[in-house]
Length: 184
Image 1 (cartoon, rainbow, N blue to C red):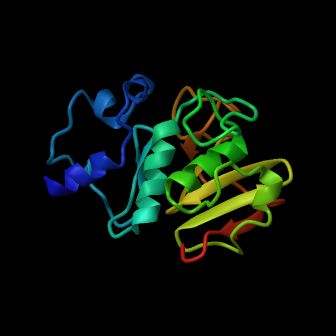
Image 2 (image 1 turned 180 degrees about the vertical axis):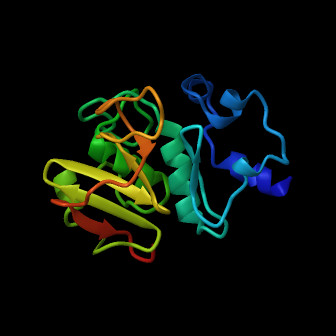
């Protein structure tokens, strides 16, 4: 039961999240014995939302929670760039900025654009979190799961390219620079 409570702490709690299909609303009630909602060795997607792996550091769990909060929001070019309070839509770099900010991994009070992410953090892949960026696009990998606004290969039925932040499969990193928060 404690494990299940930890899982639900990672999921969005707002009424708008429930409308978008958060795990609790879409399952019609979860049995504590249902293994698909328990943390496992690896991060996983359940009904379009991520569940952090067992033993993930707190900033990683916070990043997954933040991504789940805006998962399914509409695409909005430059959305969220004014400041970090939640917006009504997100583009690529403000999606990444929001997730990192809520995880305590992005300093400052304003989001970064994709070009600025090319100089952010440290070079290369992180153990838990990696931002892939170029001058025109940015997305984030958290615990092996991709959170991105530009899709060609959605794992969630009914979602289409460029419709806003979504969890999805890995994609080619060709043309992107890998950057990571120090220590993660």
